[in-house]
Length: 382
Image 1 (tube, rainbow, N blue to C red):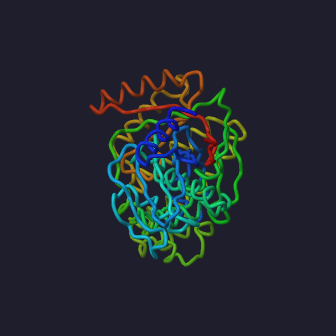
Image 2 (image 1 turned 120 degrees about the horizontal axis):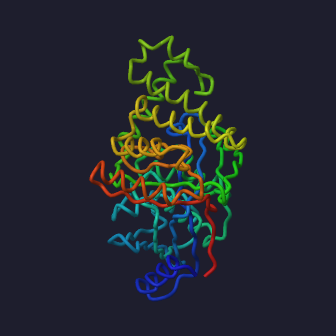
Image 3 (image 1 turned 30 degrees about the vertical axis):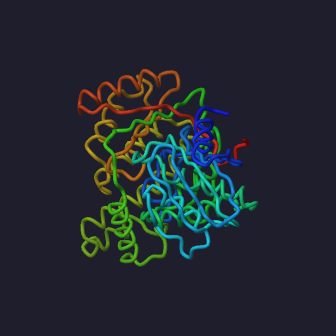
């Protein structure tokens, strides 16, 4: 039993007076490329990371659900037979309430949550919480949802209870991530292609600007803009839309919706090209595509920040000589993290330099960690 699990089990026993009977874990994620297009018929290339949410639980004999967090105050209490289960308080419990609302819960239960996925960093802390909770309820209820259905259930919970109309990527990779591999996910039919990442040769460095983001309204505004643009073009799918199509109705779209659409069209193309380049070992091309993705997110989608731009600028300045392959902002934006692909043998030096240079440039000390692709959600034996 690792330290995180042992800590969660201990606090469960202290809170409820008996040990948990079940446990589940689900990771956060980092998206290597394919940003803000999972809700636009796109392709995305995420991987699960070695930061995770753990939930432990026990069934009750009545219909009362009780949920606590190891780090956040308050207790959520509700009846699993409520229709619908209310948003309720504390606010951190809403993701879990949403999962419970759409899951099979034969009786009430007690639950304790712990997560080391940084919140507000664009690493899908909410998806890790949702998917770990769904996995726990799945095993306690004696059912098997399957990875895709579990991801869709958790996405619905995020929409209805979390207030963010996210695409499918975050919940999908948390549920179905593969150790040692990124997944190219088709966000239309949910098919996947494994893209190996050799941990002996490559490292993924995640640096948090420590400029926390609040995504909800801005995220939903970007999604609405993309939906308007697609509707005005008059085609059923973004995959059928070209830059020429957007240019033809640029005056009708207006500058903002045109720019949003240009990002979507370009990012779909970049993501497919990046997966091919990674499989071919064409790392200069991978780096070029990562930087182009960041530029588009900064200029056309307008979701970057000066702090994110600075980190990417510093990584690019270090360049291949220092072991940097490419860098970009990752996640929804407006703060959060960058992802830097590095040579494994040089990642520690790259991390040290970027942390020092960013701190000097901004006066903010970032947090950073290197990771390799991790396994997705799973049940843990107690």
